Image (cartoon, rainbow, N blue to C red):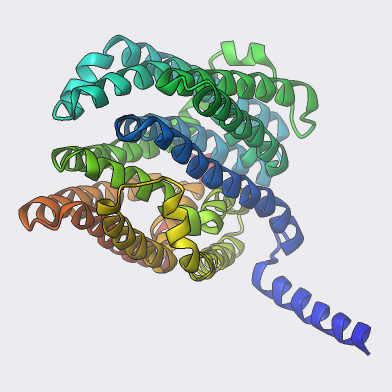
Length: 467
């Protein structure tokens, strides 16, 4: 009786998943094979980031504030590298969907070469002008905070070329639907980072120097493993290092056609976040600490949405490459629902543990109410708005509609987050909570516009294989 009941429930679940997620391009089992490794990957990244910030907090408020400031710049740089890598991932995904494996190999080589070259240039500029950059962006911070930030920024800058290799290869593999190896590569990089951070910060008490050393070692290890995998273990397409040295201008044009608008979008989007960070610097070291802790906790319910955000590029890209926009629409709807539901469920599960999570950072009592306010706003905002605001544009970019997402993101960021953030946080004296509230309002504005775009057919006209 029990076995019969189980089989009946299993059958209904399979029918539901097949109706909701299967199409001509992929069935639900193939989609789960793509999204589940990404889900595990994002869960580890979010948890390890949380643990890392908690370990840094043992070095004092000035260290937390310094890492928070520089990480806002690191996110700015990383987002541009990921944007270029995403351009390569979309081209690879569309060629995989069309069945052209030779073109997949060429696109992969050109995407990796492009991201590596850009990351090297950025590294030289960041290291060479670190003092000027910190003075320009965060000159109002305390001297102890700036001294720590300078060390961390130089170390981060040196690691950018290593990160460029990792992100470009991971992007190519995701585009080809190979999410399991990207999970292992991510785990190697992130777990080793936490272990070395634990060793250098907690045991040897090396402070920021220890954090930088852990960063460089873990990213070097991640780069070596990424190259070894794509050269020796990958069987879906051939990747030759020598092809990276031969510019294929036709293929580079396709990668840049998607990568540049997304890179510009991320540059201005995260540039706006950097400007809001300067608002927070003015509010003092306590506000910077609140921001750092809130950033670490805010992403906890977003694990499922972040996985959907990556998976949708592969699934929609391959559907568009196959010429099946009906499947693409179906997959987009499913990912939006899955992402939003996962964020809501995780928020409800995590709420009882919020005091304990905040306690991991040992904050002074006076800043705990601000952290609580920000986390409540952000967690519930994520549940209802984050997927609409970020998964939707990722789907549009996977279809080649990168210019539209660029325009919308620029307008929403500068009007919604920067201008409104200044009005709420500084002019109306709502402080750091006002800056975060402006961000959540901006999610809603972006999400509304992207939903209107998805309901039209205009995004069907941007297939990069025919451009």
